Length: 229
Image (cartoon, rainbow, N blue to C red; front, top):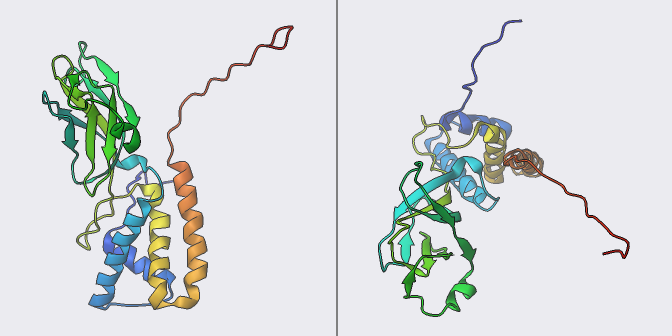
């Protein structure tokens, strides 16, 4: 049996909008309707930021440490910092040494004494402003470990031009289309809103379940002795 041999299927923004309106049972070529649909698509992407970590938006960042500087602003595309460590080199070589940092909350960071003291950092606090800020404790002296490396969860890129493709993994295409259809139905066809919502939530849940990291799990049985200990 012949197959295509390709795995490049994707939709551009215009096609996503057309398919979403079709699911609402509405036809439109209005320029305002297209702008409204693209705006709702961006709102949908923002809402996905509340739905957990999307693996395709995780990125490793590298920041050179400055002696006596404890706070570092992350790139504007970053939503949150997942984990961090300090390193002796900017890349990975045979001589690279890394030390993991412990993430603490605001209260724990506020309770730390002598935040300006310098040494080798062991903890960090992420101040989640519009653009997050990483605060290291203690303040690095940058004598041995000269780089901060951290994994970030980035925002999904805006839709942009109608000829662009959406910045989502292929497994999220179905729920992206159904989600936009659900949003558009509020005005386009309210009678379909509840049915479209159920479809959207079902497809999104399947995509989120699939969008996980697989790793080995080791289970060791508990050993009990005669006294029950």
